[in-house]
Length: 171
Image 1 (cartoon, helix red, strand yellow):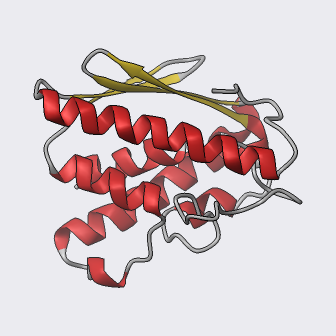
Image 2 (cartoon, one colour):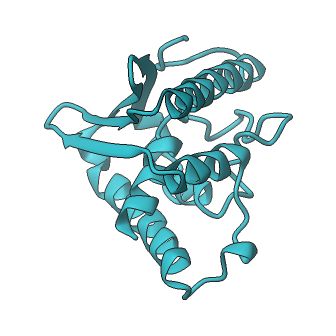
Image 3 (spheres, helix red, strand yellow):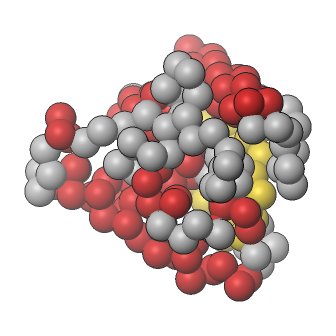
């Protein structure tokens, strides 16, 4: 389904610019841009991640992603999203066996949250894309908060191994 791919795309937008000499994976494998079949799409245009920003925030009933992309890279951003959406759709329809898809920890965990029934709302703006991932179930909200915390923690570790946060916000 389109929703599955969109959720994975949004999870991946939590990644900062990691091309060039930067690390491509965390030690735990939570993020792995080179080996995750979804994340690989972020590297097709080696400049894309350098022209994006991201933020992940916990909110009362879940979490929120805010991402931006320089207009000059909108085509690359759209192509990346389309490729991830196609893979997600192919997995959901059975065209691709999900057991053959390699995913980093972040993508796999987010897919599990989506399959557990979180609600997704997307606002595609001129200056930023905002995604709300929410639930009315307190246990699921706790899982969303834990996911956001882990993404931020692992990203901080990845950025520290890369020499800093660059243009992306610290957590």
